[in-house]
Image (tube, rainbow, N blue to C red; front, side, top):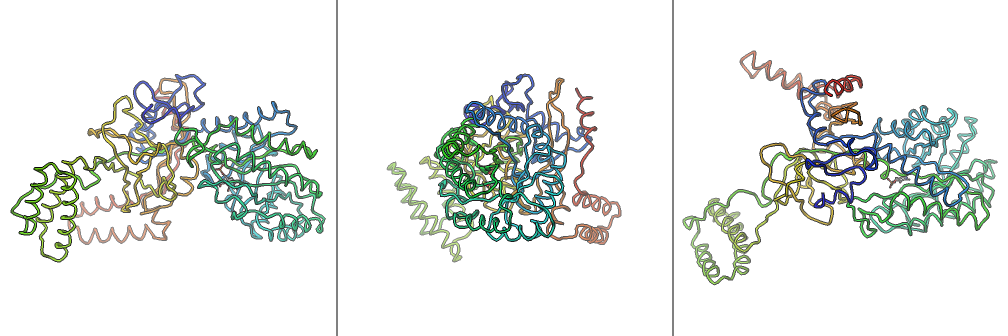
Length: 626
Ligand code: PLP
């Protein structure tokens, strides 16, 4: 646990158990420890062809823990409730979840269900997101907010107005000045009185990678002059009372509470000014940015860690709003936040398997050096090298062999050196590198997933996630390795790990399965991943805690997309492709039986659409096993 700093980034949900496996505490560590779930057991069950109604799910696998989601929501709400109560703040906190962080139907439905008692709502940034948020919130608390952000056209605004008409607590947030004209026009046309918010561009900027949307030059929001013009336009249309919410977003992964308080303080001033100008202000929406400590270092110096927890975050926000409002004698607003990363990151674990290893410099023993293969010129080099080695001048030896290899490659390209000679010189190079201790000792572990699909931020923005073996943690790892995925793309690798390391401590593969887990990737990774190299997404299961010896029940399982599914995404027609290949099989494979077997195999490869098994069958299956 110490080697991988599991306690640092994993608490209170992940720990190492006495068997040396990762255990999950879906309700946080303060709950009964005997209710821990062994992650390896989940993986074994999911991949067992006899279990889960015979699904035999393939890896990679996303394991979702709805209980963790519930705990995150409860903890965030409690942190704000405590800060509000202890500070004497005279309004309440009412958060929303930005669905873009993970639009999975069950994640969104769970959040609405778990947050219903404290009016937790949703934020949408596009028309499809708005549609899904509208339908989910129909089953939620009627007071839960539905915040409509993002660039808006007439269709988006009309849809948001309809949401209002459907008694969903909808706020249309202006991101651009022009949107106000559309809102005024369409609301009059549809006879629906909107609730309007506006997004302010703050001067407060955070300098980390995720701060690109903040500051005066940020992509989104209205400048001071634009805000004043919007107020004027609304007043002119007799709709200034519709303006009720101020929104801003400093950026994701806000590193410190000092920066947070600075931004919130600036926004609170704008809020008070809007009150002064006659708007009917009720809510300050502080956007997202509540950070995650991916490496467990609790430091504000890197993009992957933050120095605060939920309680410090809430206290800083409440205090900053309260100070400004009290000074300006403005009624305390409802505080809304749009935390995404902090709500969904912990709830899922991506499990994948190492399927083989190789040395990063090609692997295998260097070919035996045979003077026979060395050309005359190279033989001289060989003599000189022997002399250097005899004198113990290994560094010069190394430089000389590298140069010699380069020369040899040039000669090979010109056709004056044959393949055996090239191999002999490469072998010599490797022998020298080994002798001087410069040999690459980092191994490449091939893992069965696509980095582009499952960990897109590792490729796109060099983000680092905690990745560790989920078993054999009682054994000292003896190898250092990087992870290479199975796509034919050289960027499909992970060679940056927490603690700034360029390789990961790993165990020798000993014939059995070697499973690794990527943690804290529940936000953004699934939403961003594409179908690079036509690798489908992972299979997904939902796991809940249950009584009984297994202590968990798989309540839903969805196989990853079939080849047919991913081909369809790229406009191919798998049914036609299958027919073509089937005919060709009949044409080219003489034996009828063999052709049929081949066709059946092809059909399996294309497969049907992924299907959902009824919830009851899994619960029954688990209970029976218990
Ligand atoms: N709200 C807005 C407007 C955003 O742009 C984002 C993300 O960038 C979020 C909320 C969610 O931020 P986070 O996941 O950091 O909480």
